[in-house]
Image (cartoon, rainbow, N blue to C red):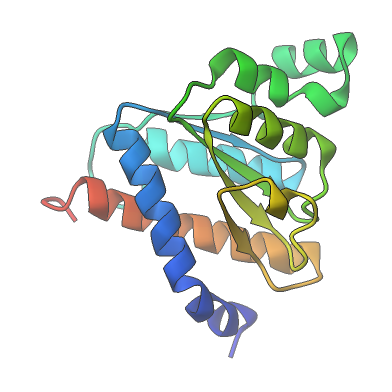
Length: 180
């Protein structure tokens, strides 16, 4: 039995709630913003692509923006302000009340992800956290948190991408039941 097989069954209700929150935001004409560092940045880009392109079913593109992809914005903000501000400044510019921020941090303590979560909350943006076992500081700043019960960053990231894929699938089913 794999780590994934033992972990995910206990998280089904959280995954379903997250998918429902995302689907409701998208139904309301809002968008998804995503952020993270390193492997979590790659996950943010990957999931934004699943929403804007497609996941499993043929459907229209859904509005999702990874805040990890614009190197000009990231380096300008990092240089002119600080690395801690690279996501918050983008949320300030792009985020609107009713949007969703998916904040990914294996430790839950990434300062730039925490900054984006704090600013998002002040703007009325729903914040969904993806963290490791302890949840770090991020777990206290989010509307709902998916916590991968592992200490290894590799296992945490494996659980995050698996969970995010499940969320994409359920979100599609909620938004496009006739196609699913």
